[in-house]
Length: 416
Ligand SMILES: Cc1cc2nc3c(=O)[nH]c(=O)nc-3n(C[C@H](O)[C@H](O)[C@H](O)COP(=O)(O)O)c2cc1C
Image (tube, rainbow, N blue to C red; front, side, top):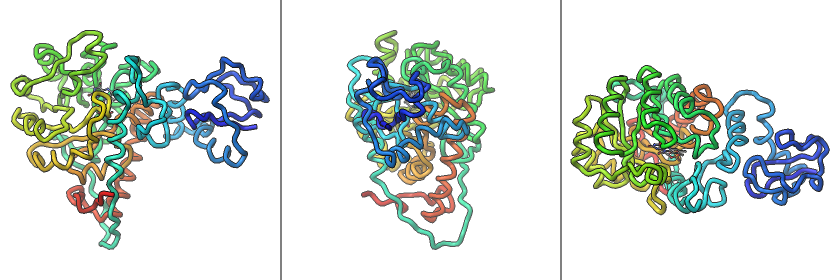
C-alpha cells in the first residue's frame, strides 16, 4: 500500500521498497512502522500517513522520489534540501508562505527557521501581492531578442536579478553546512551566472565573516551588515573597503532582530544623521535595506546612499506589514531615476523578476529558494537556479512585447 504524509503533503511512503532514509526495510507495512518514526520532511508521526490510491501516488510521488535518480538538476538539489531541512522547510513546489506550510506559524520565541515573524502574514503578503499582478500578453511585434543585462555600481550584470543577503545556517537552516561555505556558494553561484551575490550576518558567527568571505571571493559580492553601533559599522565598512567589495549595505529593518537583541543587544534603529555618517565614512557604494515607505525612501536619497533596497526581510521581522509589491510602485514614483532600486520578497521565477521590474525596481533579489539549493548544491545549484530564472525572464519579455528592460512598465501588468 502507498501513503502520503497529510501534514506536509510532500513525503510519500510505499510499503514495497520501504524507506531506507528512515530505516524502513522493503515490505514494512504501515502497522509495523514504529510509533517513534517521524516523517523525514516535517517530523510528524506515522499517524499522519494517509493511504493514497496507486493513481494518486504516481502523481504525487514523482517530485519526491526523483532525487533517487541523482541526476544533479535543480529538482535533485531541491529534493536533497527537503530531506535535510526536515521540520524547517518543506521546499514546496511554490514557496509562498501560505498558512499550513511547515515553516509558517508562531514559534513562541524559538527560531523562526525559514518562515516569517509572528503568524507569517507578511511573508504571505509578499507572495499574494506579487501574484495579484498578471501579465498582458502581447505577441504581435517584430522579433527582437530581449536585452536583459544592466549596469549596477559600475559592473555589468547579465540579468536584473541577484542573490539576497542570507545568513543563519545554524539557527534557521538545520545547521546543514558551515556558514562560510553557504556564503561562498551564494557569492560564486551568482558570479558564475554573471551577477552579484550578497551575504548577511548572524550572531552564531563573527560579524565580519560575511565580509571576509566576500574578500576571499576577490571582492565580488556585497556584505549586508546588521544595524550595529555606528562605531562598529564604520569599522566593518573600512574592512570591506580594504577587501575591495563591490558595495556595502545595512539592513535597517534588522533593528529589532530577535537573535541579535537576545544574544548581544547590539542592534539599533538608525536616524538620518546616522545614515549620512555611514555614507560619508566610505568610498564604496552604500545600500540601505528594509525600506517599505516613501518617507524612508526619501531619507535614503537625502543620505547620499547609492541604492535603496525595498524589502521587508521576507516577512521575517515585522508581522502584518504590507507586501513589497504593494509599496514598490509608490516608492518608485518617489525616487526612480535618482538611485537604483533593489527589491525582494517572494521573487521565485523570471516572471516575478519582470513584474518587480515593471513595478519600478531595477533589480530583483531572491532569498529563500536560492538558500534551499545553495545548502545542497552550493555554487553549482545557485548558478543553475539563476539560469532557470533568466530563461523564464526571457520568455516573459518575449510574450509581453518587451525588447528591453525599459519596456517593462506598469503597462505590461494588470492588477487582478
Ligand atoms: C533564512 C534567512 C536568513 C536571512 N538572513 C538575512 C541576513 O542575515 N541579512 C539580511 O539583510 N537579510 C536576511 N534575510 C532576508 C533576505 O535578504 C531577503 O530580504 C528575503 O529572504 C527575501 O524574501 P524571500 O525569501 O521570500 O525571497 C534572510 C532571509 C532568510 C529566509
